[in-house]
Amino acid sequence: MVQTNLRYLGFLNSVKESAVESEDGMRFLLLSRVLLGKSEVVPRGSTQSCPSSPEFDSGVDDLVSPKKYIVWSTHMNTHVLPEFLVCIKTPFNFNRGPRRLRSSPWMPFPVLIKALSKFLAPSQILIIQKHYRDQQNMRISRSELIQRVRGITGDKLLVHIIKTLGHKVRQQ
Image 1 (spheres, helix red, strand yellow):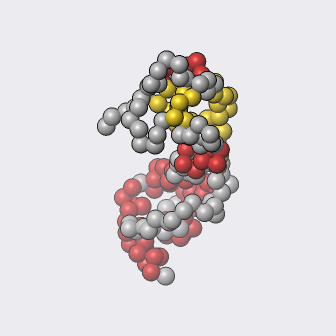
Image 2: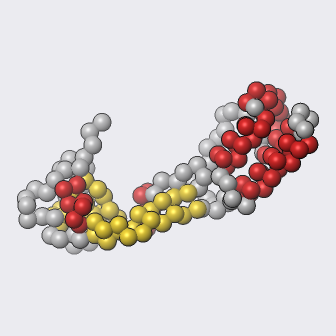
């Protein structure tokens, strides 16, 4: 893979394409002050990786109405001043685009907890329920919840329950 030495900057309305969402629904966006200096047009799809002349400090997609800005890597330390790191947590019911179809067995956590209660001590179930509430109240991430449940139950038991009951839950 060839890596070019340029950085594209855009308006806040392009946050969705600039800040990729993590599995926990977090997006990170670095807001910076940028000195554009004298700009040159860099056509879309161009392989240009540095200014065409020393008189240019940056690139734009259109001189009259720019939507994309390019800061050359040689100017990053002098022309870009990071000011804020914004962390955005999207709500669980937020429309995140097309949903992925699950190909592996899956079940809601309350159903999993009920199934685990047949195999684990009541004290362990209480701990799992507490972790689940913490995740619902956004105190811990979903991946952290899963790791904690795996630590309590062990992978063999989890795999057994999910394989046994996962397809039944999906069919309902």
